[in-house]
Image (cartoon, rainbow, N blue to C red; front, side, top):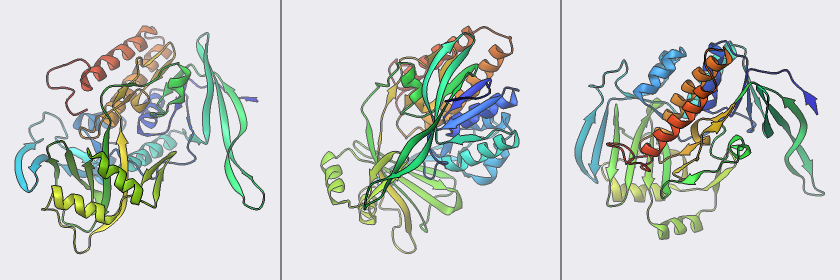
Length: 386
């Protein structure tokens, strides 16, 4: 076991929420360390749409123009009933500098955030995970394991992750942005409590088909809501909701391949599944010609909320504290706002400009907001799409 220098803040998790929290903290003059259990950056991700308010947050960190240069812009939302086009909603009337959605896959946003952090001398320690944490005076004692690959087995070799080293660090604060399996949340003794029924989606990403420019299309069925997203580079993504458990079991049985995303494995869906869903739900979408599917998986989205966002000097942001359905693309967007808010409050407390009560207020406000978004406390116009 070894000791490391103490940072002002340890950020656990190198997704967009953790990276933005670290960037906002560093910009405010705090010494930041970032640890991530995964061995590399995200290769494939599901979050992809940035709200206008999120673009305002990114503007504060000097990233809005870089995002706008790489994204696909969506000016309107169109609703379909199968082949029939119904209502259309334009974002143009929003009183904001960017009255549109910016479509940028999560891994591309992570790349921009990581680049800006490197410019400030802040990197990510991949293959590191939190083994324990405990309050110690005006700091947090954190035990961090460095993971390495080890081979074993006779005749047939196997490899797996083992603990190479353990360090003890004492940052002033810890930000847990380590996703739905959050070790920080678990060390706080918190779980995720169900806030509704989970939803199942067949997700397909491809290119080579005509796609609507500047428009997201939502296809409403009797018990489903499917979404066609335009992506940068003339790519598209379809997300089809699957309420039919019998069909789900059939797809799982006939799938011989699985797609791994981080620690998760998802059943693979083929082109025939995609074409069947398009015929049934969106016959206006062209599936012939040069269309190419780049990847496709079956994903289960939970709706859940932690009973608390943290305590003392350890606080959560993003999916570590909440999970939501994909339709309203709230989880990452609200998580990024949480990261900015939490960074601002930590900087004020660390600089002697406010008491720890500022952080307790963060937890109370965020919990109240998510109870409304998830429909746990009915608020006008909120909760239906989370």
